[in-house]
Length: 438
Image (cartoon, rainbow, N blue to C red; front, side):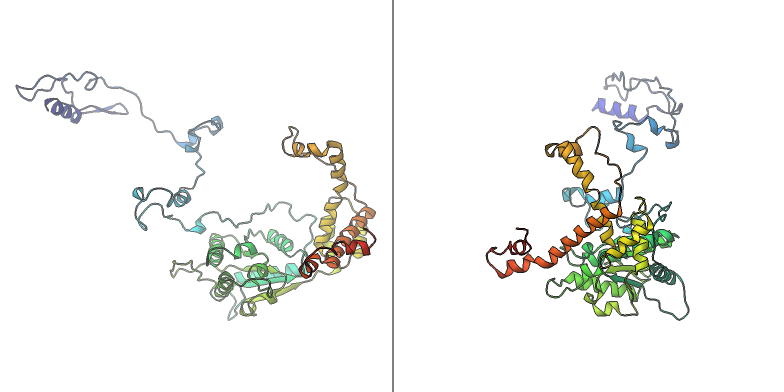
């Protein structure tokens, strides 16, 4: 007991040192509080010697980041790229509840809203020389630019449709033309695809649409143009006859888009209701057949519709952009487009890719089939590099007819119907026998 009292006395009257500043008075090494108490040997604990080391605060600007290596265990203290709020949220429920506060009061709830972070759907473009050689159809650009501009204007007594629906045949370049216009206008859109319009949890796609819309609204509030771009809306929310299942999420996606179109400046997340208005965000959707969508969604007051069917001049202009780096003369591009009038624009992109087949085939024969995997993935020299093959009009026409023949085989044979009709596959080679290729 005596020793404890003496120790407390020494601790309470110790010496403090900060930047060579000394506070307090000297205390004898032997503290005596009565005749019966013994002397306490405080050697090493109550030394009167004071370290006169200087104390200096170093700012982050004085640290040379070039001296830090990947092996430095403290390197993240200077450049911390982590997101504490997101890390806290991810850790929710991962530890014993004994170490977490009750629901609603703990730090595992994020303070910032979702649109304060970089959106997972944000598409950023490099705006330097991205349009050189690419063709934008005048009618397409006119429709898209006018719709976006109208939604950022305040027109007197005019209700502007919020959604622009661009629909047409497959492979006609709808999405790519939209991206070119966005680049031209300096817009980094918030992207969504049809695959995000369905989920194992009811209500998740509708919530995601509202979240992405609010993320785009926040970008606009900060002074940058933005749009919400949904690819292939009919594939995710359409009704394809009896071949697709109509789910709760399909209904909620249609209803959410209708609600946003009617109230574009008051879009709330579930469980989050306030009177603060958000910015109006134009919505651009693409699809192949909008007749599969819910009819009230595509009415004129909510969605402005644009049917995209490229003309011959549009097809030639786009194909010139496809073959712009291959030194194909313009007259050969025109001849190629006229040789396949019923094909989509995507057909000519696939045709260009087929020209490399000969070069790849030569490299495989030279390397050996057994060594292909090692050369592609584990080679010290890196993946092989090919010189750009010379593209002549004869070679392009040859590969074009091969692609058309494959298309005809798919349409003519239709093995799926035969498999459903017959239990055995006895007639599987009937087409090859009839065409003389068996």
